[in-house]
Length: 216
Length: 216
DNA sequence: TTGTATATTCAACATATGTTGAATATATTG
DNA sequence: CAATATATTCAACATATGTTGAATATACAA
Image 1 (cartoon, rainbow over the protein chains, first blue to last red):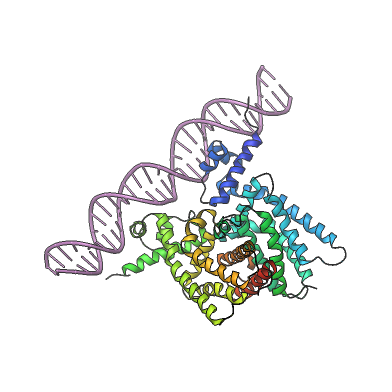
Image 2: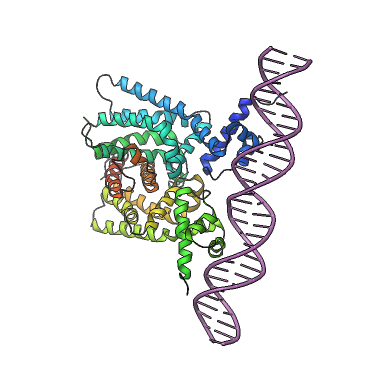
């Protein structure tokens, strides 16, 4: 009698690694900690995924394509909805954020861990250039193109800097450090993604308009 | 004949640790790497600063008071300049960011490393609650009070969320990951703090106004 | 069934890690 | 100068680390 199927153990390893990498970063986690959390032998992680750095890549890439595809889909749907005319800034930003919000609110807690790990990667000078270009940067380019269309008179640098600010606001939200809970005396909660995203859209849109000029 | 004074070696250790912690995080750095970069014996770091975690605290705290004091000073001067009436949003945000910009542009490259390390701490769920409350959160509270005065009709949650977004935009700027360089095809540079801060002020101010309602 | 590929465990390795204590040098003070 | 405190080096420790190879178990195909 077997307890779990093969793929279950392999995914338990990914789940455990995901949770630990999200909180402690790559170097703050040992293979033994991962194995312990996944309740498997240490050697099994190496058997399935190779070196530690390969496991890190595997965890990062597991949900990357899924999320990126969902993003493209939503952005496309948003484009079509704005029949004929260009989308509003709010529509573009919402399309960019919606898949993340849905992932955060998923019943699978792994998605929250994954996005916290993405935030870690985004903020890390070391991992950023290694992991972000492969999957995510392509969709970011599409997103920026949509912004250019909505802000035809904007200088390209302005758009890039504004995207940079949005990216930072997003990363800190995904990271879930709990700081806003502390600073607000409990009035705001890191886990309240509805609150975070509902305000982020008008905040960012207004910033874009101010810096990049009125949209057409 | 002695090569360097005692305090110089001790500060070389702090400088080396600062640079390495900023880039690789706490767990990504070994005492031996720090010692090597500082060109001192490994044991010397322990002799001066105790355990590794204490060295981390020492690096973080070395410039914290200095920066925090500069921040308070600028915020106070900004308050007085707005004689009688309350400050504008832009003035408040500028006062918040100016000391950081000055530090970034300092001739001492240690300041850039330090601020990148602060960004790492801000984005880390583990270190955030350990290190941020001691020094920085007090000034943040003053800053938020100024915002409340400038946005008398705003709900407190809205202000906190907007501050959270600004905080994220700031953190990613301090982190200097180089991502904006890549995404913009070289049009924007992570090291161009003038560009980053000049746009961040109107961006954030517009976001606050949109989310928190018009200022008085 | 038997044979074979896959999955999992166990034990061990070489190396890297933070930290310490004793020894030595340098500075400071009387 | 001598005496004392501080700073620095050296060597070593116990432990933790990623990784591997052999042994064993399980799944699967013939």
